[in-house]
Image (tube, rainbow, N blue to C red):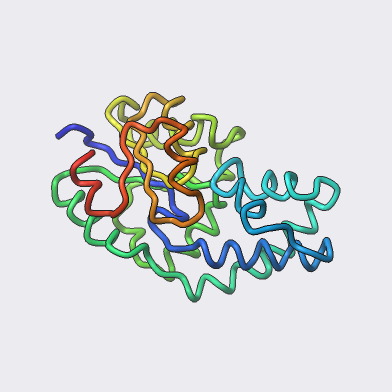
Length: 211
């Protein structure tokens, strides 16, 4: 097989979380700042170097309060979480082919586990790297390289699948095959194309042809 290890981003790639992220970003901005900027601005940094960095881009003088309000609003919404349509079957097929799977996410490890408590796919992944497990975050390669290290594999044998520009940059920096997906509805296709991924796919089933 071309890539014996396939690593995945979580939000917008495996779990369909765009709506709850946007709702909580909007709630935090309205509660702390009195008004929310346009949705595109709220979502611009999602999937990158973590929630604190997202809030710093929004209002650097209110980071801690924004993060606190966001989390209090967002965590209960995980009860509504579902997997991205069609990804379940693709993950099972990749496992059946003998691939080793992992998650590398900007979410804190505890929040990733909260997602898997609602969307029971965690058993398919040999490792989960959360955003609080490395000092540097996507688009730096450190989280992806930590996943490869935990699995004892060469990064060149890994594909990384994600829905954000930060995912593509991190994959390139780590020396991994970069696969962009468009179904997450967090970042548009044009933004992904500008990062020059090795492949870009519009439906989970297409992953089987590029990894």
